[in-house]
Amino acid sequence: MGWDTSKLRYTIVVAPLKSKDDEELRKIPLEVLKQRKEDRLKVKTRNGEVNIFINNFKMEEAINELDWALGFWKKERVAIPTSNPKKCEACEYKGLCDYFKNGQQF
Image (cartoon, rainbow, N blue to C red; front, side):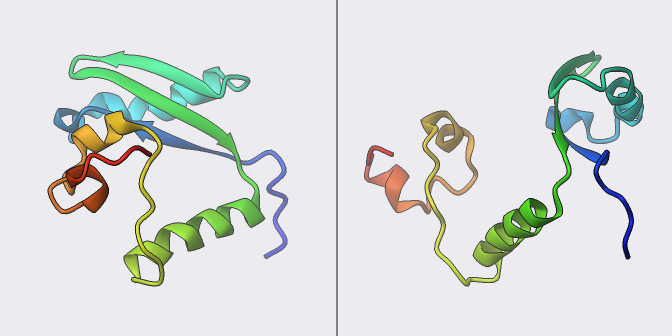
């Protein structure tokens, strides 16, 4: 639509599952506004620590990342194993994953 997105930023908030309905999470945008120069923040809530990743918005990168993620969910590509084995330990699909079951190195 022609809007200037050069100053646009977006956040990814990683919070404990028990924080799902936590009103404190609604305050996080205010924390981001206060810390404009940071690219990562940690906020303590009563339900645990919340990690906030702040990114500059770039349209082409956003479209590429979205297409990449949707490619898996639309069965247009196979899953790509993570290079971080700690993520595998917590993954709900590890019982179905050939890489995890076979103990392969990433």
